[in-house]
Amino acid sequence: MPVTTAPTPASAPAFAPARPHIEAWLADFQLRLVQQLEAADGGAVPFITDLWARPGGGGGRSKVLEGGQILEKGGVGFSAVFGEMSEAAARQLHMPSLGFYATGVSVVLHPRSPRVPIIHMNVRYFEAAGGEAWFGGGIDLTPIYVDEAQARRFHEQLKAVCDKHNPAYYSKFTRWADDYFYLPHRQETRGVGGIFFDRLTVGQDGSTDELFAFVQDVAELFGSAYTLIMSENAALPFTEKEEAWQSLRRARYAEFNLAFDRGTQFGLQTGGRTESILMSLPPRTGWAYNPAPPAAGSAEANTLGWLRKGVDWLDHA
Amino acid sequence: MPVTTAPTPASAPAFAPARPHIEAWLADFQLRLVQQLEAADGGAVPFITDLWARPGGGGGRSKVLEGGQILEKGGVGFSAVFGEMSEAAARQLHMPSLGFYATGVSVVLHPRSPRVPIIHMNVRYFEAAGGEAWFGGGIDLTPIYVDEAQARRFHEQLKAVCDKHNPAYYSKFTRWADDYFYLPHRQETRGVGGIFFDRLTVGQDGSTDELFAFVQDVAELFGSAYTLIMSENAALPFTEKEEAWQSLRRARYAEFNLAFDRGTQFGLQTGGRTESILMSLPPRTGWAYNPAPPAAGSAEANTLGWLRKGVDWLDHA
Image 1 (tube, rainbow over the protein chains, first blue to last red):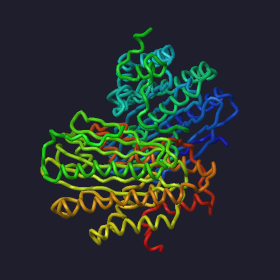
Image 2 (spheres, rainbow over the protein chains, first blue to last red):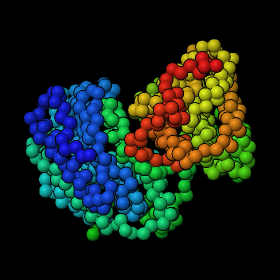
Image 3 (tube, chains in turn green, red):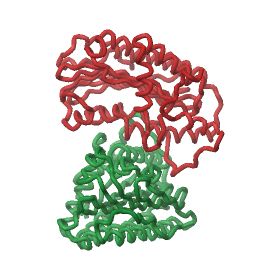
Image 4 (spheres, chains in turn cyan, blue):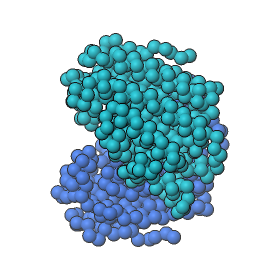
């Protein structure tokens, strides 16, 4: 049964007057995105809803679809949490204070077909107890098989959203995504990148309204860009061999999220709800020992060739 | 084709005269253990051998079996590495210096049947550039379904090995295992524990000979204790429902190794060979969202009841 109101952290210390507005927009955005994804998946399988409270303050609303027509597993999480984090967590997360407030929407979608890419999106707003406030977020696309035209279009869409707000954003944030969504032990990027940004600080980098408008546009792009890819690729045929490659790429995704992702670390270290944090993990995967590299010239080898930093997708038109 | 000599880090700075002896014993122990496991698995599927060099110094020999009769995937790794680690790695690993030498044998076995437990063993010897040298190690058992008599016997065997060397070891090291092999975000131990020890420091905690004798006895116990469990449990029947529970428990194992295990972090941060470090990960697994807790009174609920710190297995005789 869908829930239409977000849990409100009524006792949260109020730092910024914009906080309730940002939180309410994100909670509503989650509902709209879920409707859009349900419809794109065919409408037969609804997202289920779990409300949760964080013992230290705040809570969230997790929406999860499993066994959809196109989406094997998809999670869209909203949360608004606050309180005090441990000194160790604050140090590791480079927080200027122990007291914090954080709200955001996170999405990871694992489609059934190896022809449809995994995708991730996050938008978030933070306040530290000293009064500092900032936005962060990003979208990155992880194709099992890179479709070069789709990857280029995805980057063009991101650039258009960035350019609307700041001509420096796209080139800075796409490099940041390459650096962030990187598996150092594999010397591979997670996928074909996208954008990543953090600490867009109110005052220093723009007004609350300006920065929030950018974050809203990033969030709104996500649904239209991804449901287009779903509609284009979901009916493409695939083989068992391609599913085995999908399983390997999903294992890389799990490696990144568990061993490197700062969002996962933030959630686990600040007492977030485990099942909501780890709903990004793939539904079926596994680790074979030292699989043979793909044959030269194969579609798998072509994909691996794109999993590197510094690809300028807009230069491949 | 099996290789019978270990790569010798000829140019390693020599700190302790015992180093070559310890390294050679570990390299030989790996070969003997692999023979024992191959025979216990039925002898039809051999471990394959990969030699690898670490660019910063040293290398290792990985032995891996996949698709055995009992063992779906098993890795037995020997390594002897040395060089300088980054300041960040030294800080995170609490190393007294950047210069280090480390040698050890690590084992993780993933049996096919949910009736046969996952098991892990590690023995290791470290030297820091300042002259400090220490031993570490441990064994822990991760049943998919806890067999209480086997868990008790396993702890009795560990206690006997500990008691032979120091009457304080077992109670200290079994508590340490509970604390180390713990998933804080799940509030679960990884399995029924075992022993874990680190920084058994030469001089302070015993002579090199005394400490190495303890570590050798821990290593030698592993093969006999585990092959006995293999022989007892491998032929027991199991159901698809029990395999689904195995997949969930394997996912917990992957969560621990990727997000919390210091051995994995040490390997990835010091430029170890990725496929050798991650050969501990399960061959088939997956993450469903928020699976329903096992029904009260079920075998799965009984197992969960044992996955907590502070169980005194020797008090359940």
